[in-house]
Image (cartoon, rainbow, N blue to C red; front, side, top):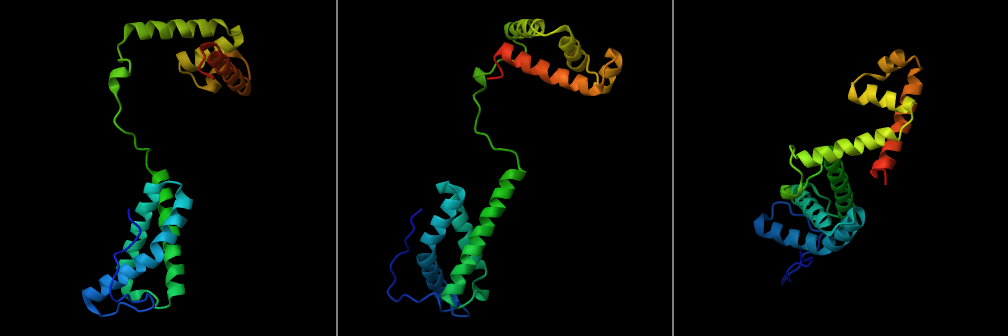
Length: 188
């Protein structure tokens, strides 16, 4: 995105309000507004986002809001610039919140490299890996994992079944899963 407006013959200052001067006057006002504010706003937004494309998008949104509110904007250049920076900051915050509120976007995934859901060899390897990892556990830790994950019981049920406190069930499950990750190489 180019950050310079075309040179105009008569350049009005931003201190002139748009008012009822018509479309040509509005165009001149917007060019001046862009020329005098785009670079500092872009640098400000780039520091906030760290991404060039995001900063450009937020700059466009800020300028669009200025254009939509052109009849209500202050005539004083200093006040107008502060207003522009406030709007830019709020637009950036709104964009961050919106991005956090929706799931992360992913590009096209090449599914040819992913194993199919019915890959018998992959399933056999998974079973062997889990058996080897379970064999490395103490009998107490193995019993907790089998009840929790293979039989689908809740921690309170496992505690009653094994005759141990529920906190002990949770602790054993934590350390057992950690041990299994180390054995399988998934904990690295």
